[in-house]
Amino acid sequence: MRSIAALLATVAIASPALAGGPVAVEPEPTVTPIAQPVIASGMDWTGAYAGVQLGYADVDSNGSLYDGDGMIGGIHAGYRWDMGSIVAGAEVDWDTADIDLGDPVLGSVDDVARLKLMVGTEIGRSLVYGTVGAAHASATVDGEDYSDNGWLFGAGFDYAVNDRWTVGGEVLKHKFDDFDATGVDIDATTVKAKVALRF
Image (cartoon, rainbow, N blue to C red; front, top):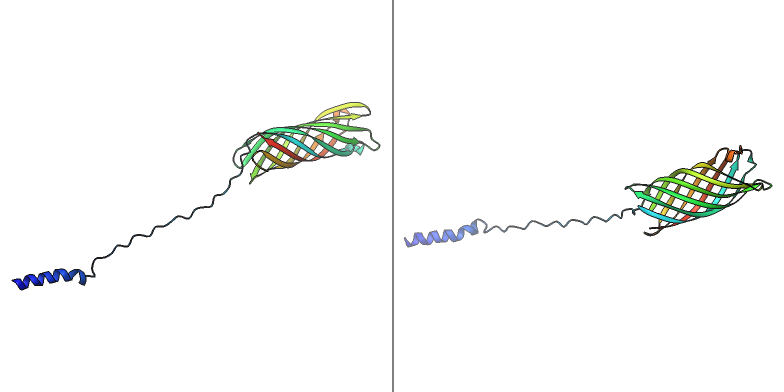
């Protein structure tokens, strides 16, 4: 009886060793997610702005009697709405002009005011846009004052130097048919550099 008990005890002790002993459970490896790079989004163009511009204008007339070119410069103000990838806005501007018309000189362009609608797309910190609108020009010819309304179209861009200041450029084509009932059709192209402060 004692020998049977000893045999059973020996088998009980030896069984785990024969079976390979207790099985160690390896912890599952933990996977650390790789941080995704942060992509900087474009700036928010929504808001009001105002600034100054300086540029050059080239004026052509039918018959070339009142052709001319010269410097222009003035002020502008507007408001934009940022709708994601599309930015829309409205802008008013005014330029005084130093443009002699004709050779010999018959007159001069005195100033131009504009009301423009703009639609564009942002590319990083830049805004590229197209514009259409109305224009009003004043001129002096042979001592007489003339003025008339016309229309314009063009394109431009702005670059945000920081959250407050932008710099940019704009090219506009102006059309004045039968300027102030004189029978003269006027086309004017302007190229301007612009600086603005955003509010």
